[in-house]
Image 1 (cartoon, rainbow, N blue to C red):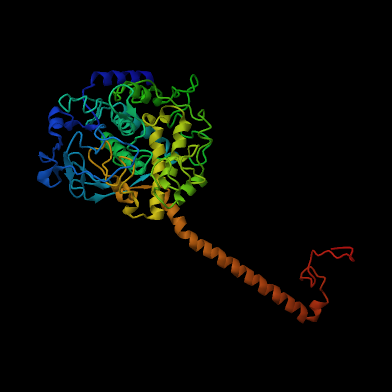
Image 2: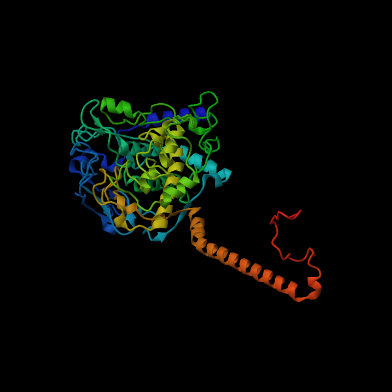
Length: 526
């Protein structure tokens, strides 16, 4: 039955494949590219950006000119530089509570026709889901994998290969694969022109400060697309708490798929994920050929957890390592890259030691250790989002980020304004999001964005109660010691005061006058 469903799905996808990209579908046209304007009409009032209803306006894009770090010494070669100016210099800028490429949606956490209703969703531990909720999660993931995105398409060529917009090169993919492509595109090598001519020391969402804000927005958009696709606006991404795990706890057929008994690198045939095909997974091949991922499927989903390079990852992260990471006060330090010492971001990302806090660690820790441990599609940065475990993993990473934000309550000035690696400065627009988001906008608590993690309120309660509990324990100990001292004193006084008690010193009910357990050389007993 699974094979039949998969076969129909592949046939369906092949029959309706068009020519488009992850940019808004309405902006993936020759007209939009040549005009460099992405200001689609909002159907609600028939005006660009919903301007007639005051939802937003088509405005010039403003980008920061503050200097980047030294990791990328080029200018004008990569389409992601000064995003999104290579493609568009005018986009919708939404007012008040509105958001979206045409201002047709609400800001995260807001609902209703005028986006005035505030709701808070809760992301729960995946192991706390009921059997029915687990089935729903898997069915939603599979639906997203086999349903074309109505709103977005992916770029399969550079702007230069599109002849500066006159020959659009875009492709339709499923809702799920839009997000696979986004993660590939933001982390891919820079194409400098021609086969093999690439720059590898660049990533607009990893290895630097924007790592956590970028993935926070990524999960929020993914969550929203699932809600739109299913009509289930109560849906929230669950998280996998992998602290002290001895293996891949979620690798079961009622969750993310067990290991195939026939091939340890494949998913069990009893899981729907065994039929999934991956895309954008051949980073080295793209670099050799000097091309972008074309959006075609490249083989089955691979995973062989635990059979990885143990020199890079000895084990999964521990609760103590998570606590050490959250205790680090500085969000980022030094050159704000993989060498950053005592950096919360770098330690959580996995390049700083979760024991010493020093950067450029030989062993990968925290976030990175999970990717390596999975030993398959998830172990390549560019193709890692092909594995649905990616979502559960990053939801938990985001929850650790949330713990840090609440514990340290940083000012926005704590986030670096300039000299971070390209793409990571405070006011940089996140690649490749349209609608546009700046990094600094998501250096804020999830409470401001309409969601919560189920365990954090209890954690906060314990943190708030701890000083009181500690005080109560100390006070209790002092009271106990005082009572004991008074009792001992009264006992000695009483035994000395009453004659009949003095005659019964040997009674088992009194404290002897000489100290016990002192051995005398001239006595036979203790």
